[in-house]
Image 1 (cartoon, one colour):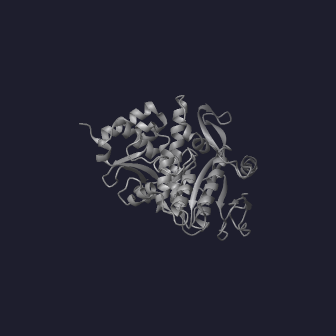
Image 2 (image 1 turned 60 degrees about the vertical axis):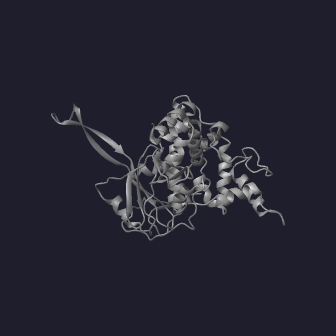
Image 3 (image 1 turned 120 degrees about the vertical axis):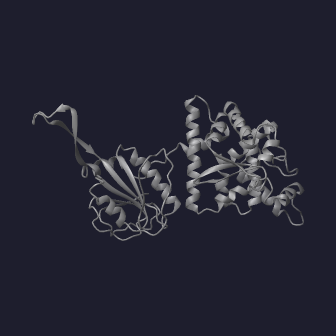
Length: 392
């Protein structure tokens, strides 16, 4: 007799052959089994997502229905429903609207019994593939009703059933909805990163992205244009701050000093970019900083990112292909990142700081430091030593 784990592995392989994007995306997700969810759901795992499946419910389904159930949960992730839910005051109606949207992309024979569709509520016209927001507004208007009229009976029946154990309530989403806004952004960025990787793998194998996700995937590959001409500015900025290193050559001898190894001069442009992750910097500003870092990286310079608030919380090489975990969110103090830059063992060529500018000028700041204020900054902090600009 197959265990739930065996069945899940089998369905994952089936999806890879029938719908490769969903199959590969499913394999990359953390998975667990729990009887605490009525059917299946998507919850939080670190800064990523995990799939939670009720083993009893899953085991009783036919293979097509198991496949439909898993695709249903993957579509909730891909369409961003877990993050979007907080924007809607009536969570029950949002859950219904979200289910109606994604179930249109699951074949009827794969949809488990009870799955909500456009035809689940006779008397309410729901346009084909109109989107969750449109369905929510239509259902919300139906619930408010006209004077003297009651809510649609079929809709009211589903709403009455939506408690903690209902398959329509998406209980596991609460793990993410209760997070601070900055952490939600991290979760979103992580699952978008997984989707992008999956799309790249599919395209390498000459496959195609599902039509319903094409626009979403295309948006993930779109990088916003830089708000500052980093290529031109860094070329001038680095040339004034570059450091020269000597490298001994094992296979060549020094022509001037016989018997000694040859020497090669190397210009290393290593830029330290301080990223202000204090509480005064909004999630939108952090996303803006991320875009600018991506364009700095494209200039060919080595970029090391130092996240800081009142202290340095992380120092690591910038890699645009990896997800970015935000650390900090306390007060703001520039001194630690300046001290790190000035430490002679680090050998940085130049210093750039992405910030909202809300802190005092640090001591021993290099005169050619570049202070980049976010577009949301109220004003440029003129007290800071060095060059000051604002993104716009």
